[in-house]
Amino acid sequence: MKDLKHLKRVLLKLSGEALAGEKKTGFDEATVREVASQVKEVSDAGVQVAIVIGGGNFWRGRTSDTMDRTKADQIGMLATVMNCIYVADMFRQEGMRTKVYTPFSCGAFTELFARDEAVSELEKGTVAFFAGGTGHPYFSTDTATALRAIEIEADAILLAKAIDGVYDSDPKLNPKAVKYDEISLEEVLDKKLGVIDLTATILCLENKMPLMIFGLNEENGIARALGGQFNGTIVTV
Image 1 (spheres, rainbow, N blue to C red):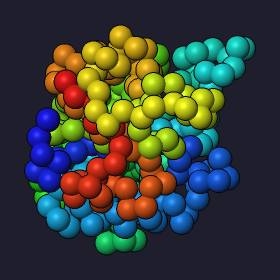
Image 2 (cartoon, helix red, strand yellow):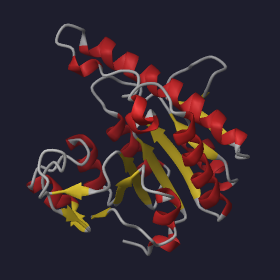
Image 3 (cartoon, helix red, strand yellow):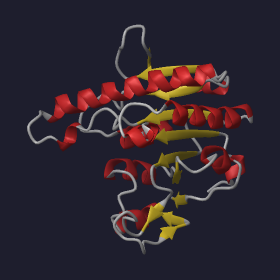
Image 4 (tube, rainbow, N blue to C red):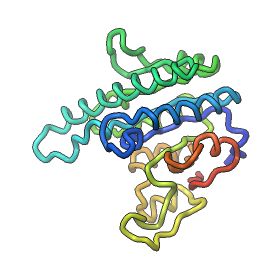
């Protein structure tokens, strides 16, 4: 993997639940503004940043045994659109230029995703938000993250989670869980660690897309990660 200080284009995946803060649902404005401040710092330093946001702060349709999966996933896609519109506006208030892309038409709310147009905007310093997942049911935002990162030829995927890295077991359930500083995607698969879903893992493996996993709640975590002071887990390919 490249020296972290030399990453020029990254795709940052934000957990919807993490953006909700302690409320666990909706948005925590202070958390979102802190993320915006950190992204502005790395963007001003010349790093091109694209963002995918999960929808778990609004919708967890897969927990239902009664709702049609396709409809549940469609609601989840719309939850990610709401998240991206909100966070993009917070970014604009911090002085950044942003664009929200979706794989389906949302009227005047977003722009239809086109790879070349998105890359052109990234090269101009625009923070590009990729909302709406892949546009199809049965694919998670993990898969959308891997797909978009590969399409825009990102140097790495940054996963900002409620947990600060990859552990050999769930640290919430096992206080003796061991954190990995570095682990390969093959090991993640073999040990069934579930860092990202299987489809996304295979995409990253086949296209040699590394991941950096860290805690969103870590002080200045995003800026520190790209500044070479990374304290999370690097997942190599």
